[in-house]
Length: 430
Image 1: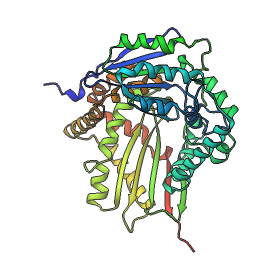
Image 2: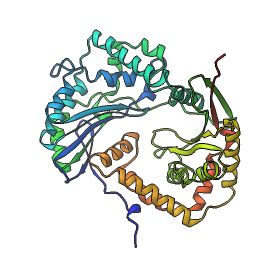
Image 3: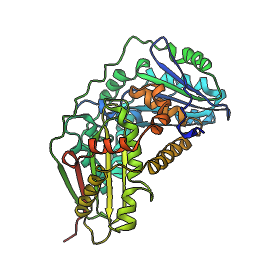
């Protein structure tokens, strides 16, 4: 009997407007609501040197208004229509989205199309929003040793690729961002041909395509954005160590980063095995690292593994841990690296790997069981340069992973000699 957790996902409707805008639709008949989003193929990794934080800054400014909806009236209008809206910026994607009654979908599409091309920015708004972004950085990063640690570790891990820049931006560079910077970035990247329209709800693909032509289709497609050409990360030839201390640290910790492929980049065929490997090693009490270092050896308070393959250029595999009292993070790290070496020397049992695959696929599919969640997953893949077929086949790819695949990717990517490790410790006050 086939396991539904490894069955392919339903492929969405895909179309394209005459101006080059991609249209992705996932029909969902369960409720008369719609998820509507515009995913731009631009993020923090596309900022010019010295302008970090610009992509995120522009995301904030996009809510300031147009001639049709001035004075930050976009969100209040969405709320008046019975919906909610938000946005996010990542290294590769900037997205704006709404959840609204299906009856007002075309009106919201017209509003989003309006701010794709008619953004208006007053100098006072720019200055005020820059202060908001700086305060966000203070709250989320500058006041958090753990967040600062991750930011510093990421900057050390990527020596040449812009993924090493913080999404929020470096404080001094945020302070220098101007109205002209924001508008230049907007005009450079915010075009129909650089965007994916995604809709999920009680509606067909053809209906959405017709609405899109009446709204987004009015925008001329004669100014295509530049191709994604980014500096490439050179091979790692030496272990790098980062040490950071802060009196605010509660528990010391370590994190080790290994370079890995992204799902849509070169080597992406190893993505499913890396996902299963992360599940096999950590993240819950059934993981090998947890069972050995927390439950059996009592050397760690928590420990885990994670694979991040949802990027355009590079992925990363991370091992992290918080040592138990009396154990230093350096000691715990050394023992974890020795444990990984032993893992790469023997093949895990088929039965155990099957359990991990089913748990991973099942949890992911459960998370996609809401209006818009599956569409968002497809939209991210397409915006990064992948295909809907690739995204739909993910459960099958997980199901096909073998114990031998886990050993192969562990030996291929989890090499301590090419890792970057950070130690965060408590700085004792004098």
